[in-house]
Length: 338
Image 1 (cartoon, rainbow, N blue to C red):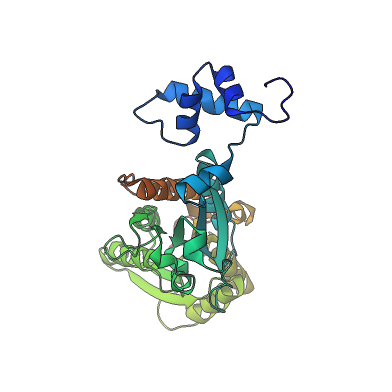
Image 2: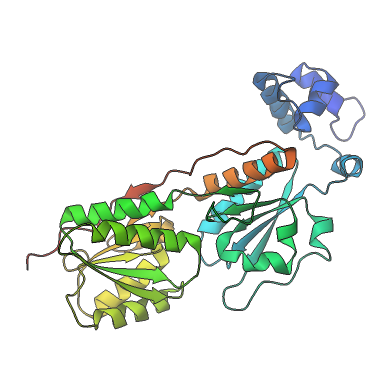
């Protein structure tokens, strides 16, 4: 650090990284690609982090006419999944000198209060989950550079769309359960008009319907444990063959299904198999541990932020859905012989 200085300067970073001040400005301003090497850029970032250097963003923002602030619009924070999305987005944003403001759109009571007097004046861009898309018009977020998460790429509002391969997740669940010998299914489905839930329902129906002698019923429920308990209870009382496999749209719904089954004296997986989606910590806390589709929430947030940076810079964002993984645990097994 320069003698007598109370905070490190770009000159201190340049000395520590053994580069010019111009190189420091390029790297910390995220304009280094094609002008300095990746190794040099990493050396500058490491030196800045080690010294605790923070660029004068206020002065830079006045020059660029930017606030370097991004809004992340998500549904109500009722699971840890969107906490992971925020963590991933904020990490990438910080590496590029941006901040992320989290804006939950509470379920059932409409969008939250606008956190800005004028969103367009206060933000550089928006990343939004399709499940919270209604909030965009309330804050005029659809008029800003926008990246949509979990959204139909054929009709997305955004300049870019980032998706998890949720269709592959539904396929993996169906093939796992069919391979175990299950033929009668109950889909405990989130009662939310969203592309992600519609896409997985279509894939589940297609996979199950392709096998002779199968049946598939649907029980819609709010995204709550109590809602899933009630929906499963009602569906299990319906006429017809009792389902031997209950496919839930997320792990929290699976917890409600566990309660419904146990109240009936049914054992998991001896009498009924259960699956979820997300692989949040709850999945490992249930007894037996839940077979579920693991979604990488932090990578999802990272990809969303990278896509928005690409949109802001006029570059094409990375293409391709984010892979998912089926995690098989103790909640699934072959059905009892008839």
